[in-house]
Each structure stands twice: as structure tokens, then as C-alpha cells.
Length: 185
Ligand code: FNR
Image (cartoon, rainbow, N blue to C red):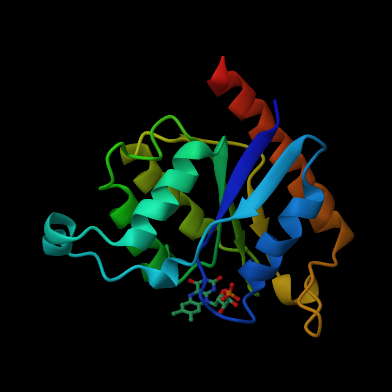
């Protein structure tokens, strides 16, 4: 049956490089695979355990349900100060408190884009650490770190134009599809 992966975006910026990468993913998916964006993590309040007790935020519940219903998640995010952006960590903290916790046994691929040379590699390893606690199945390889992203994304159209990057991301999606098939068995 058709596989569906959801995309969790770690930048709220309108002209985000990572958003440009995320927008390209549906076109890069192999046939029989759909890739759909999740809602904005900008709609989540700051994590507060008191809110969790009184009125769990509706956008968190909605996203958790979408993640639970998908065959896997692709997290596309910037690196901030050598780590995971606060807004993304906040979203993960919220999602981790939903029951059933949506990331358990969930295949996850990580993609980071940055104007810098190493493309957000350090954030990926911090993100992996949180996903260990969430008991996700994070794809090991290929790792997708998109360095010098301003040269790979057209500044006018904000489209991911770099052919090599598109091919590489296609390979990572195929690896995620294979991982999801193994997890399903
Ligand atoms: C950055 N940036 C950045 N880049 C990087 O490669 N490593 C880093 O540690 C940081 N740290 C950092 C901190 C903060 C607070 C900001 C605002 C930016 C630069 C970052 O990669 C760049 O702004 C990207 O364009 C952000 O991603 P989006 O929003 O374009 O997807």
C-alpha cells in the first residue's frame, strides 16, 4: 500500500532555506510514496507542564495524530548555535508528552541546510540524542547535511535547484522507505 511520510520543519522564517528543501521533497519521492507537510510548530505555545494538565494545545494533538498516522517523519531544520533551534526542541518536547507518544518506533530521517560549510551537522547529532529518548528509529545513513545552501537554492524563487542535492535527497528518501518497510514487518 501507499507510504506516506510527514515533514516537520524547524524554521519559522518565510524565506527559510530549510523550508525550500522541505517544499522540494514531494517531487523527490519515489512513485507510490507521498510526502506531506505537518502544520507549523510556530502554533505551539512554550512548553508548560501546567498547560499539559489543563488544556493540551490542539495544534500539538493534531500534529501528533498526523505523525502517528504516517509511515515516518522527515525533520528538516536549521542549526542554531551548534544545536537544535529552540522552536523545534519545544515542538519535540510537546509531542513527547502526547499519549500514545507519536515517535515510538517511528522511522525518522534528518535533513539540515545552512549557508555554512558543514550544513548543520552538529544539530543533527543533538536531534538524534532527543530521538533516542523518544524511541524513534532514526535513519543512520545517508546523512543529509546541505552546506552552502544559499548556492543551491534560488534566492528569487526559493526553489531547491541544485541537481546533486536533489539526487542525494532522493537517495536518502529511498533509504527511509526501506527502513519503513523493515519496521512494518
Ligand atoms: C544561525 N546560523 C547557524 N548556522 C550554522 O551552520 N550553525 C550554527 O550554529 C548557526 N547558528 C545560528 C544561530 C542563530 C540564532 C541563527 C538565527 C542562525 C545560520 C543559519 O544556518 C541561517 O540563518 C539559516 O538560513 C537558518 O535556516 P533557515 O531559516 O534559512 O531555514
